[in-house]
Length: 279
Image (cartoon, rainbow, N blue to C red; front, side, top):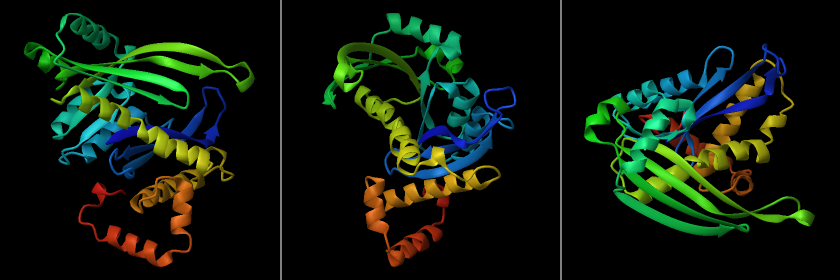
């Protein structure tokens, strides 16, 4: 389950001043199924995304799932809540947790990798190689790392085209990213899960912005933008359940299919535990 927040730009008030406020939707997204299993709407002035994610983590207790989050949620409390709830995590580690980042860097420098994996691909003119290795955290340090058992190091390098068509140039890139995990997985499993986390951006947030034009919603003020954001999210999840890979395909599949949609909604309403589908 990937957890991430998305701001609703049509709710922005106060410009870039200290009075700025906006509404965000924090979603729990299934890597495998492609739909939202839980969400919470929050106001920037009233709550932080960190608090909301911790609340959602508590709601997922006992589901025995793997939760993936970005570096904002690398706090020890969030990771401890995931473990306490009987789940596991893969979390991005960056310099916002400076002491932890330095400690991880030091461990990686002398630890012997337990597993490695490398894959290459060429998509849309961009050539990328991803080298993933797993470094174990020494047993004596485990209590200090809130359940983390491995540091995963992912090196991405290759070439990509930048600039406009008339003045394009080929540039090299080379990036190293760190992750913490409570799992005993192979390097290829970690590599797949780390890539899977970004499906919440590519298959949910991007679809809502570009295909459904959420950021340019004409409904402004009050609860309308947030309510319509929930409706869009529901429609995206419904489309995935119908087996659609793209929203245009979903529109064609669901257009005038009232009977099919009614049967699907009836099936959802009869679930014993709706949290495992979406709420």
